[in-house]
Amino acid sequence: GEEVAQTPKHLVRGEGQKAKLYCAPIKGHSYVFWYQQVLKNEFKFLISFQNENVFDETGMPKERFSAKCLPNSPCSLEIQATKLEDSAVYFCASSDGGGHGGLSYNEQFFGPGTRLTVL
Amino acid sequence: AQKITQTQPGMFVQEKEAVTLDCTYDTSDPSYGLFWYKQPSSGEMIFLIYQGSYDQQNATEGRYSLNFQKARKSANLVISASQLGDSAMYFCAMASMNRDDKIIFGKGTRLHILP
Image (cartoon, rainbow over all chains, first blue to last red; front, side):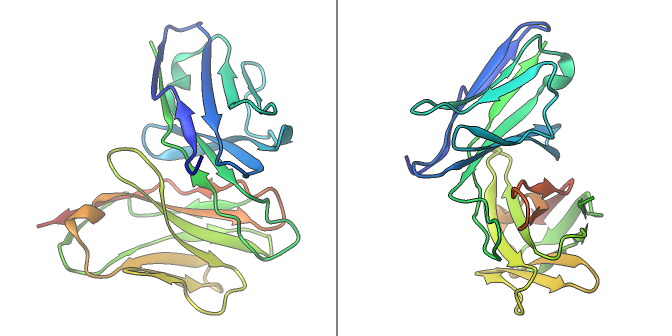
């Protein structure tokens, strides 16, 4: 598609429950990024993929968060045993290149986000 | 480490006036890009403008221009002739061109345009 799609739009979970978010990047884009936005201002990078391979996972709280980008499937971000502090909007972005070795920039196109509320 | 600083948590500006949103950054990478995003109350992230660290000219996109001062490590956004629809949260951001291009965001400035 021509836009990054994210589902669901809203997700409500009780503390300790699992949450799974999905992202379909723009067709032809090989890079996918996940960001967490807490309280409408602070963005935190979580993880990025180059196709189905993890590219950078330095932002992931690994004990409860996991993510995948499998061929011919939407990418997913899963949170096991959610905590109150996981309440945030999770944005997915995709780009058509990583910009390595050159001075060009490959714009990241953001999806509409998934609002996760943990009660 | 890379860092973006936006010192104005909120601003009020009269409609049709120009407004400057401040942004300073810190990086040791020689090649990087600077961006501004707009986030209206509906929540979506709207890309506004991009400046590469090696670009000689300041970037402009319609009513948006980026005042890039490399020596001062500043990348202020200037919006000319502000409109009511410009009321939103504005994020300054940066990505290294030598790494994986993850974006580092500032904490944002909430802009209110007054009629």
